[in-house]
Image (cartoon, rainbow, N blue to C red; front, side, top):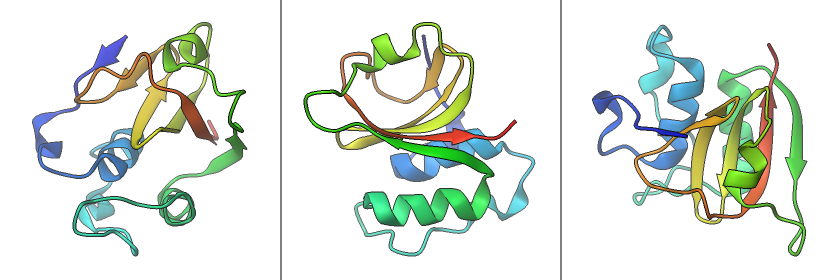
Length: 118
């Protein structure tokens, strides 16, 4: 199920919103922008990897090759963990079967997942 992020994230790039939702509002240092963040807010997978790992304890990074990428709705089915997910052109935060995004992404393919340690 899609959950809309809080209004404090309006206007920020999806990479920032996804990590911000994962970290939570308790972290006052969250408002710093990532190195490599371009004007349009796009982060490459490498830059996103560095950004996520600088703010969150990551258990494992999982990459799906073309032809093996599940749709987000199928990926979330039965999921019991928290993660930041890269879809084709978009980043979202997931917690169990819910995802945080300003857009409907159920039918987007999952490219990469950063599983968060509990």
